[in-house]
Image (cartoon, rainbow, N blue to C red):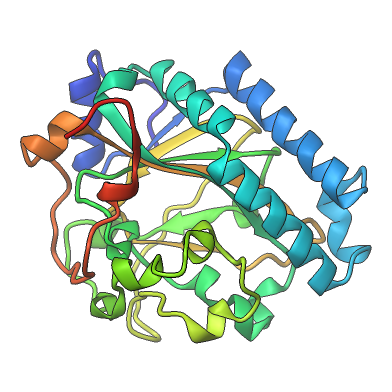
Length: 278
């Protein structure tokens, strides 16, 4: 993973589209943001050590409380405005970008054993969810995390076809009843009843590339990267935030990562938050 950005924002984006991964330092703004989110979680859960929540709250109560926070963070204009500010720190002009708002992600120890949570751990490309090929992902950890607490990329398959079922995903069907399914895990049974694209079962993605990180660091990567959340076997619940975004000129000029196997239907772009129209 690279630490230093190219000289221009265009070069930065083009490097991402070619598969480069960038892990950049925390900033005052990112640390302030994640602390605000952690304070929201503490207030909602009424637990000071939120990384131990799995030992305190039952699954149903925890799911309900986190669902409320996910909805707030995703829909509140305050956090959408803050997204523009965070991306501007890294050279993205707010007038030139559009995004699917920040989502709060929570991975609990041994959560992979719950059949309803299975899709969280599916190997996938984010573009299989009807995102454009120019998609860039920014991921922020709320805590210092060891390598076994994050996720892995399968770099050999950035430029190779992955057998998958992305044709099952239709964005219009995904949002026909409102944004809750899109926001993530608002319905406790959605992991079983909804269509989540993935690689075919038991597909071997080859070598993996993982990472450790500090709270508030910024991981930028292409939405076309084939990657997978790791099962958590530590006694810590993991919290993170991620936002998916595009540069509007990349959309118009058809820049982006290669599309080798994405057969998802529809487009998320029509619902992205943006300043100017495209």
